[in-house]
Image (cartoon, rainbow, N blue to C red; front, side, top):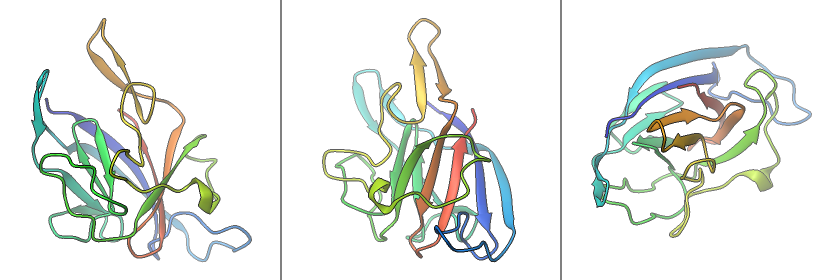
Length: 171
């Protein structure tokens, strides 16, 4: 099943999107919208899920094929380049120390880096960004077979180079 994502990404020109508490922002924000981020999966519906993950680097502001990724997408799953492998088919190696904090706010209201205790990495038995309807970024309706993003779910990523970026999935 191919899932198309629209990603609103906010990146500082200096590769950080949020300022740390008590530190003034040193450069203006650059907001980029990524439409139709291609992140399909194979299988599902009782079959093993597979397919390559689409890896994204906030520092480069684009999809990458090397190890410089911060987050990776496949179907409804989002991985973080930090922590441990979960054990998925075709899962990329974790070569960085990225982490993510999931907030309940609006994109415009998130102006500071959240407390360090709210940041998570993937682990052997869990995702930093939870999967399943209502748990992470989406809801699934079995009546309409539609996946819709949950409004007000904002993600702040500590990137592999120690900077910060935030994103929201819009559709």
